Amino acid sequence: MSTEPIDGATLLDEVEAFHRRFNAFPTEAAYVAVALWDAHTHLLDCFDSTPRLAFLSPEPGSGKTRALEVCSTLVRRPMHAVNASPAALFRAVADTAGRPVVLFDEIDTVFGPKTAKDNEDLRGLLNAGHRRSGVSYRCVGDGNTQTVVAFPAYSAVALAGLGGLPDTIMARSIVIRMRRRARNERVEPYRHRIHEPQGHALRDRLALWADQVRERVDGVFPEMPEGITDRPADVWEPLLAVADAAGGAWPERARAACVELVNAVADDDRASLGVRLLTDLRDVIFPGETAVSSVEILHLLNAMEEAPWGDLDGRALTPRALSKMLREYVTAAGKPIAPRPLRIGGQVVKGYHRDDLTDAWNRYCPPPPETSVTPVTTTPTPLPTCGDEVTGPGAGNRYAPVTVDAP
Image 1 (tube, helix red, strand yellow):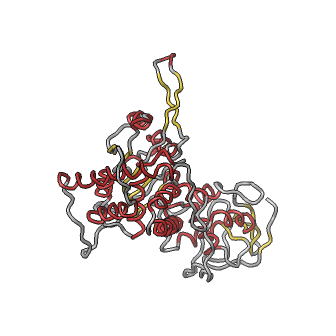
Image 2 (cartoon, rainbow, N blue to C red):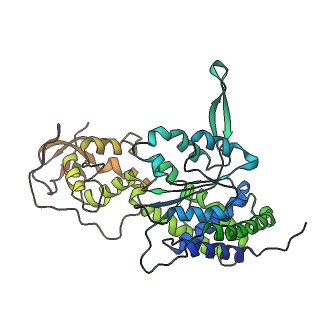
């Protein structure tokens, strides 16, 4: 049966307007991204990957659950998974004929500090399912008759929760930082019996439009904004393809939203504590210095008022934690970054040399600020002795010219 062509741009405008009625998203870019994400679930098999949509906030009452509720009326085959077991999710997403769009609320109860280790299977499923080729391996059978079976894992997933997500999931996500509504922000009360049918009417039109543009979208690799490459490009390709198929103002709006939200994640201190550490070392600790002792690095990092180092799970950054975090990165020679003996001001201390950090700075850190950052200074007080480290002449004072002993 033939149907009249649907104007994709007008339809996406209506989807966005539907969200605006009930959701107070933090930016215009968020409305664009969420509307495109809703639409892409109807074209999932046209893409090589699907982004996770993450509604995150620092406090309850920020509209995350409502965002999932509205999305559920618009996406293809929604599955609310707040109480779903990993086994149920494995089975559900493996059904390629009836593959659901998984809407996972209260994700902080799954990946919180006390529960994350017990949910590695679920984290693996969410990671693998980002790619169309992704599979999850499970043992099937009883006793000695068990066999390893590869279950398809590809599925669209939206998550909502407090705080953050595992880094591997964050890297595959479009992150919407939700916040409590201000007194002057107004949204309509969402009434399930009244508004769900309205969302379903839009959903059905999205499905019809998807069938009309499927051939134009299937296998297309849209032009990416300048600077969007690698994982961010994988995340945004499906949404930009949808925007290009819709036409109108959507291609331009989608690319502007892409740049804004990708940069927001790059600037987010929670995106990677390791990158934040490298950046603070480059911009605050090492300007003008060739080498700095571990004791002074810790003293200065822990004194930074707007940095996380003074309170990591209730305690300040320690020499062991500093060493462990930096060992995740390597020098230009391919060796883990590690403290080494240095001769500073006539004393032998353990610390870090600029040459060992430069390669990691170039690879992982955002561009340095245009103006130099003033190093942290405090009222000079004696530094504590830390293990086999020898203290310098005083806290907050830069050391004399450095000569480096071979390790």
